Length: 154
Image 1 (cartoon, rainbow, N blue to C red):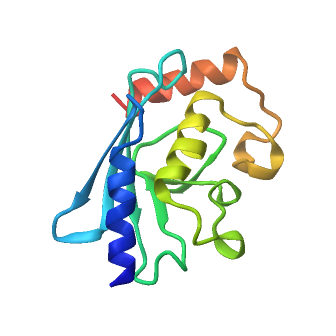
Image 2: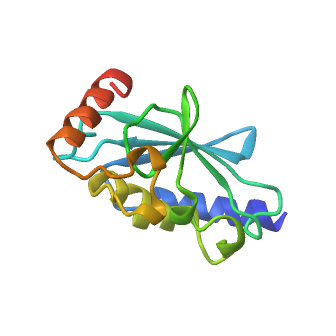
C-alpha cells in the first residue's frame, strides 16, 4: 500500500504544477493509471494540439519506473513509435531501466522533461528517435511537425 500512498501524493503534486498546458486525472477504479493531457505550447509547431498521455504505475512503484505512453501521433525527435497510435519518450530522457531512481517523480518528469521537450525539441543523437538522425530544428521540421499536429492532435 506504500505505492498507492506515493502515487496519490504525486497526483496531488501534479495537480499543483503551475502550467497552463497540463491537466490530469487518476482513474477512480484504478489509481495506478493516470490520463494526462498536454496542450501544445504557444509558439511551437504543437500549438493548438491536444496530446493525450497514459501513465501506468507498477505495483512496486517507486522502486520500478512507471510507463509513460503518448496516445496521440506526433512528429517529434524524442518520441519513439510503439505502434500505429502510441508513442513513448526516448528512455534516456525518462531515466528508465537501470538509471531509474525512486527519487524521481512523475510531476517532476513532466515539468522538467516532457513539457520542455515540446517547447525545445532536442536533436542530440543520444536521446533521439533514430528516424530523426541528421535532422535539425528548421523550417522543414517545423512544417512537418505542424502538419502532424493539425492532422492528429486537433
